[in-house]
Amino acid sequence: MSEKDPSKEEQSSQQHEQLRADDTEVHSIEPHAIPPHSVPTTSVHYGGFWMRLWAFLVDSVLIGVVGSMLTNVALATVGMNENPPTFWLFSLDDVLKAFFFYAYFVLMTKYFQQTLGKMIFGLKVMSTKGEGSLSWGTVLFREWIGRFISGAIMILYVLVAFLPKKQGLHDVFADTTVIHEQTRKVIDQSKLVTT
Image (cartoon, rainbow, N blue to C red; front, top):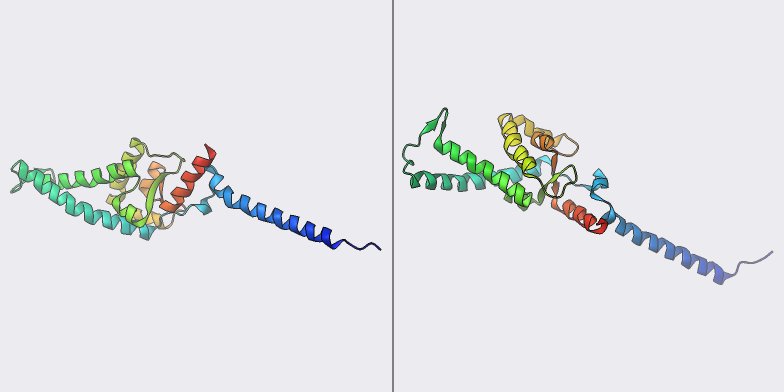
């Protein structure tokens, strides 16, 4: 019977451990090397209903205060702050506040992909098509038309709690979703590695 050489067993064991260590290093790099369109949905942390609600409430308070101040200044500048004219059912005051409300969401989403409320809660709007920045058409459709429809039928906001990608109706219309910013950083790093 031949006996195994202990030095060869030790050497083989060390090689096996080195291969396992090398394998671990490769796996720690691979998630960053995955192209964004092939990132598994389990690695993306979508912004849920409550986080998005809190962000929206922060934005609503902010735009309510700032929008009212801007509206009062605009009406006072043209001398209409005492008795603003009405258009059908809406006063000029209401029309200006709606303008500031939608302009805030459209411009913040276009240029930063997040509003101040989303920034506070670490949320960001992304295209589900894997595009880097959002086009004007996507932003206008999501923030103006989609938000108007969702706002008219408030129960539609609850869809965020039940859809797999945590999308509201306005997200579904515009092919967008809201994710946690940390997820976005991982996706951006994967783009750098693949390009």
